[in-house]
Image (cartoon, rainbow, N blue to C red; front, side, top):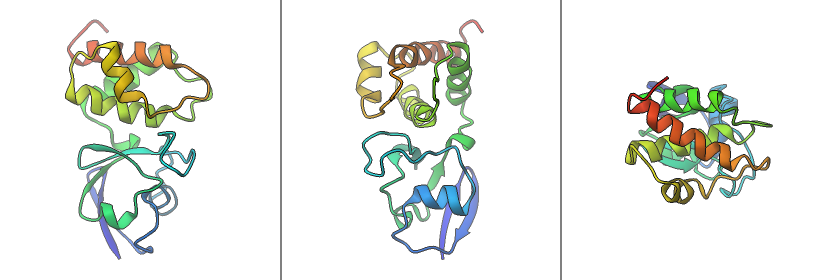
Length: 155
C-alpha cells in the first residue's frame, strides 16, 4: 500500500512500488489528463508536478512519489494554471491536443519561477516537451499571454 497526496487529497493505492506514477494516476485514480507519449521521459506528455517540480510520470516509480504532493492537470488550480488554460483556449493552441497537458504543466512551473518570461526562458523550459503538430509558436504566445493574465493583464 502506498499513500500519495494527489491534487490535494490523500489516496492509498495497492500497487507494485515500481509501477510508473503515470499508470497509477490513469488506471488506479482515473485521472486521464496525464498522457502516455513515449514511455522514456523524452516527450513530456506525462508531465506532472511532484512537490512543485515538473517530473515525467512515465518513468517515476510510484514509490518515489509516496508522501509527496502530486499535482496533475486536473488539480492545477494556482492562478497561473487558470491563466494558462485560458490562454491556451484564446490562442487556439492545440491541434491534436495530445501533448497539451504536459505543455501546460511545464509552463506552470516556468510561470511560478518567472512572472514575465522571455522567449529564451520559454524555449529553455519547454525544450523537453515535444509537440508533434509543431504548435510551438502558439505555445510560446500562450505562455506570454498567460503571464500577462496572471499579472492582471487585460482579459
